[in-house]
Image 1: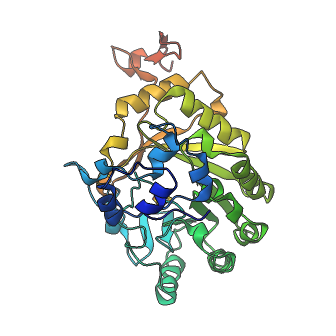
Image 2: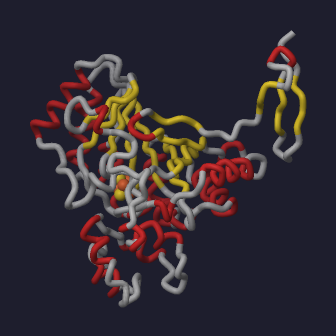
Image 3: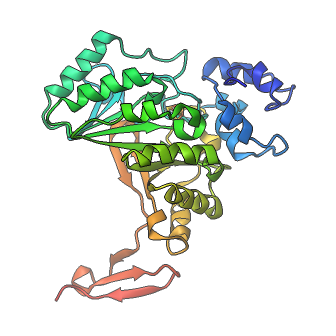
Length: 349
Ligand code: SF4
């Protein structure tokens, strides 16, 4: 089986009913791709399958909401040269490609990725991006993102990592990807070796949203990365109808930890156009975080993050368990316990 890229292919694979003609319009507007590994995970008998919900187009995507915007996290406002986003002083995003093995229906860069999106960097533009990183000694970390950088051949990845590693002030190279789960066969020994460079540290941040994505093949792909000495982190988007219940979210976080992946961020879904049917409220997210605290190990706890629209950066959005007592902090604090109780904590003597 190949990656499914058209409505006809999705229909032939039994992933959408014949009657849904509006989906052609959705596919014309936003890229479609479902890898064999993800197509196999979808239960055709479940109209609410959480894997299908992430990748199969929905006509609700044609109904953008007033607060939604094409560049929800404001990448463009912080792009000094093409391919670089320099929002925080000590790190940059380096977007080499705008293609992905799958196209997620909630993607925050959905206006930029895919065959109809932005082009990958040409050799000259890549050189300009590397030059920018060289000229900015405050850049400690380079985050390869896009698109999914692991669509690149191992030789291109190796050359990129070597070029970055040769810059003295760059100490950390972080790769953001869905590849280990959506196309685990792509995580070859050659590709893993390409991500490492002598004297520098590489991290791989895996984006996965449902525990079923961590199939045996995906777990083996992650093991190849971690066994090579590359620590892994997780990123999850909180999605309505996919993972917005405590059982699913807890199982996902545990699966990450079992794979030696430290749960890092649970993202509140961004205000990307035509994605409101997949967003939860912030209160739902905070309540899920409350329910996970105490129920599953501290190792399994991610931070719940909001990307403040238009480039204002990421902030953790709680929940918080401590507040000043009624008389102010001189009088101490009120602490919420994990079972919902409230205790006093004294001020500093
Ligand atoms: S893999 Fe990432 S960049 Fe690509 S469509 Fe999904 S969320 Fe967007």
